[in-house]
Image (cartoon, rainbow, N blue to C red; front, side):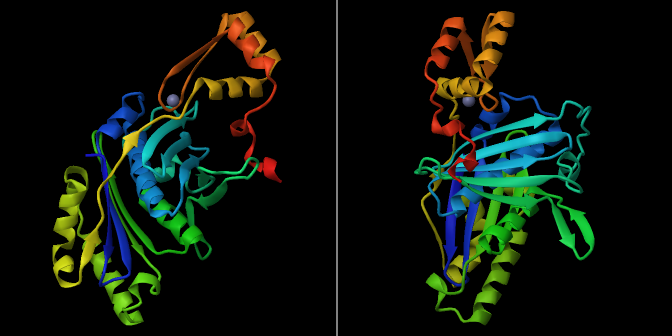
Length: 321
Ligand SMILES: [Zn+2]
């Protein structure tokens, strides 16, 4: 399937998306060997990345990074505006055995330091212009109490609330073979839904959310977006109108290249690289996302340091200041 369906309600100020991912998820997993609890969270983040990326009016790459001092040190999911995706996880060296029942809160140290960094890197970024970054703590402050966020859906919902000021509800589910997700977003009452009075608009948002709440994990994982859409919105569609747009394809694609690895070697510095060559004969590295191996022998490395210009991609984002 690997499809995303976008729909728009006529009788409620709501835009929605339904996603189903299977072989693209397999492509991500076949290069990895993560514990089941980590895989589950990665799956939810992949689903969330596609839903989020498709809901932003933005050309370029969206990067969701979860950083913590918990067992998951770093989790990165990248999704471009044409829905190509790649993902990786780095576990802490002292992660130990991770229980299959470990929660998002535990894995990402949500009661303490865990946070999400969401970066929007425009396709046509001016040299030196920093990409847009939003940071969301994985803790919800309720008065004086701190409550760890319990799901990826909740974390992304908080991000949308903070950064886009849009009420967003997300349902996500993933297993070994499939990822499914539903997103509902309340649009401003003006715009395309000016024909609804505030009461009708509020009532419509409530009605569509209630329909969303009927979705089951089984439906999210096993039905195509088109089938889920028909099941959920059959009645709403005939009474108030719901329009669906052409299905969009989701693909796996990595952006790694020999040029980018060469940039990393330049960042390491000539001395460091010469030490590695002296010890190991060559520099060997594998892409964290797709596993592709890159090898640089002594001659390659000399070539790398002949040009001392850093390409823009390796400069820190703050270089524009
Ligand atoms: Zn790669």
